[in-house]
Every structure is written in structure tokens, then in C-alpha cells.
Length: 194
Image (cartoon, rainbow, N blue to C red; front, side, top):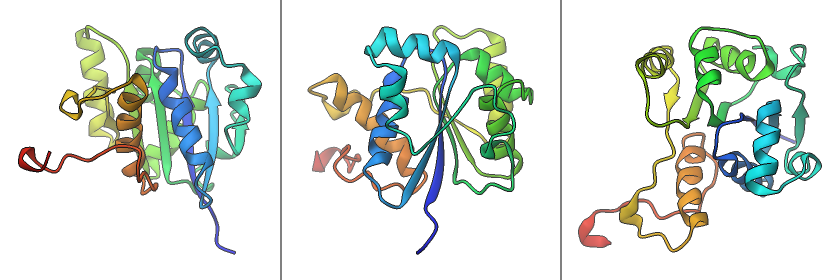
């Protein structure tokens, strides 16, 4: 039996908890993937407010759940093989922690590990407008090899629902890791074909 591919999904307190939840739902349907979840305290508050989802309902979506303060967790070590990490949504506080190498909780530590091991790290940053420190932190993470992916809807897709809008972002991000996203969204094929 081959080893499942592992992907870490981190959820912070920024608006947009639906992105992390939807990623876990998609990964749940993929037999060859193992999801590892870590959520901040503010992320739990926001999850309850935005989606009316309980902690236990969220945890049931993940294969493995890690506590935010569990710095001894498997995902805190480079020796634990993963395909990388997605922070969805990513607050400006977490962006700053990743940009400056603060391993003060398991989200920033797991991101630091993934970056040092040259694994894919995608941050769905959520803030507007941005000030100069936000922009510099995004540049720093990019220079370190991370990918800044603000969840911006592609209105040319002519969405019929918020879920379709979320699915497009989720599909595009998970596709970067090789997750089967068939049916999640329609990739752009050119104006003449759409």
C-alpha cells in the first residue's frame, strides 16, 4: 500500500473561513490524500460566526487535527513529509509571523518548516486595503518561495452562487498540489471557447 500524500490546511481568524473548510471537504473525498488541520483560536471564533460550524464538525473533516500550541506535532518537523501547507484564510498577523520566521504557534512553525524544506506554501491573504508592511511581508514570503494567493473571484466565470466563487479559488489552489479538482471549477480556455 502506497503512502498517502499529506497536505496541511491552516485556518486563521481572517474572514473567509469557508476557503479552509471547503478545502478540507474536497480532500475528504480524495482517497490518496491525508489532510492535517491546524486552526487558531481566532479562527475558531470566526468559523463559528461566519459558518455556524462547531469545532467538532470542523475536526471531523480532517484526517488529523493538531492543536495550535502543539509545537511538538508531527507537522512541526521537516522529517515529516508533506506536500506543503495552505493557510486559508491567512490573517495579516500570520502573514507577518511567516515572513519573519516566528514559530510562536503551530501554524507559523509549520509554514516555516515547509518553506525551509522547499515545499509549496500558499497563503490566501485576507485584508483590504493594504498598507506598506502588509505589502513588504507579502514580498518577503514570495522571495522565500511562498505563494501569495488572495482569493479574488474571476468574474469572467459568471458565477451563479457564492459556492461557485469559493470552488474556483479552492480548485485553483488545490490544483497546484496535484489534487484532483475535476468538476470543481472550469479553467479558462479562451474567450472564443467560452
